[in-house]
Picture 1 (tube, one colour):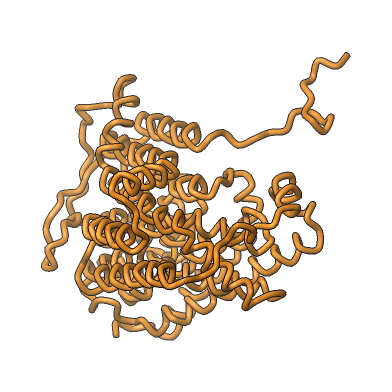
Picture 2 (cartoon, one colour; picture 1 turned 45 degrees about the vertical axis):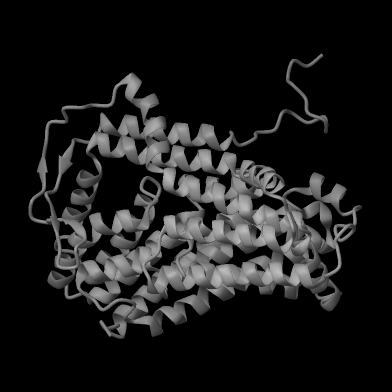
Length: 470
C-alpha cells in the first residue's frame, strides 16, 4: 500500500493555499527578517503648505534602531494592528450589519429577481451593469468602503447562473479598474497632487482614457471566463461547488417587488449617493460613512416594521459575516506596525531615489512604476505611500525633466493595480467573497498582466505628449 496520502479523486494530495490569516502572519515574519537585513534609516517629517505631513527629501540619515523587533513584538503587533485598523474594521461591521437588514427584508432578492426577468437570456448584460457599478465605486475612491457589497456581488453571480468567481471578479476587478484610474480618488491622486503642488484632480481627461482602457480589459477578462464556464462547467475554478449549484434554482424563494421594498432600495441608493458626495466634496472618511449607514439602518427598520430587538439581532448576524475580513484588516495593519518599528520604509525609499539618479526619463519612469508596484506588497495604504514617496519624486522629476502630472499618474497606476493582487489587501477582499487566494491568482493573472502592460504604455504616452499639470 502506498504511504502517500490520497484525496477523494484518488490523486496525490493537492496543494491548497493557506488560510488568509496564515499568509498575513508569514508576511509579518518576512518583515521581521527584512528588519535584520536592511539598515534602519529615516527622513525628517515636515508639514507642507497644504497641511499634509511629508518627508523632507534632503534629510535622510541612518539611525541606530533602539527598538529592534523582538519575539514578543511580533505577537504584540497583532494587537497594535487591530488598534490601527479599528476605524476600517468598525465601519465594515456597521455597514455589513445594516446591509443585512435590507437583505433579510427580501428587497435585494426582489430587485435581482426583477432584473433577471427583464434580461432573461442576457445574463452577461447584468454582469456588465454590476461591474460598471463597482467601477464607479472605485472611481469615487471607496476602497474598503465597498467591501460590504462584495458578498452581494457573489449572490448576483449565483443568481445569474455563474460560479462564485464571477461575482468575486465583477466586484474586485471593477473596483480595481475605477480605483486605479484615479479620476476622483482623493486617497491617492488627490493626496499625491496636493503634495507636488498640482490642482486637485487636474489632468482628469487623460485619466479618463486610462479608465476606458482598463474597463475594456477587465470586461474582456470577465466575458471570456463567463463564456467558458457556461459552455463547460467543469472549466470553473470552483467546479465542484459550481456543478452542485447549477442544479439549484437561485431565484427560488425570491420575493416579488412591492412598495416597501422599493422604498428600502431607494433609501439604499440615496445612501450610496450621499456617501459618494460626502467623500468627494465634503472630505468624509470612515466615521461619517458609518454614521450614514446607522441612519440608513434606522430608516430600514421603520420601513419594514422591524422591532428594535429584532433589528439588533439581524444587525449582529450581518456583522458576523465580515468577521474574517475585519480580522484580516487588523493583520494587514500589523505588517505596517512592524515596518514602522523596524524603521526600514524610509531606507527602501532612499535606495530607490539613489537608483534613479542619472537615469534617463523613460528608465526612471519604469523604475518608479515597478518600485511602487513592488512596494505595494508591504505598504498597502495608497495615501500612506504617497506621503513617503511623492516628496522624493517631486525634485527628481524636476532634475529629469519629467512633468509632475506624469509622476502622479505613474504613482497612481503602480499603487492601484496590485491592491487586489498582492495578498496584503486582496486577502481581505477575497475573504468577503469566500474565494481562496490560489484560485484568484489562476483567474486574474492574465487580466492584471494586461493592466500592468497597458498602464506603463499609458505612462509612456503621457510622457511623450507632455501630459501637463492642467
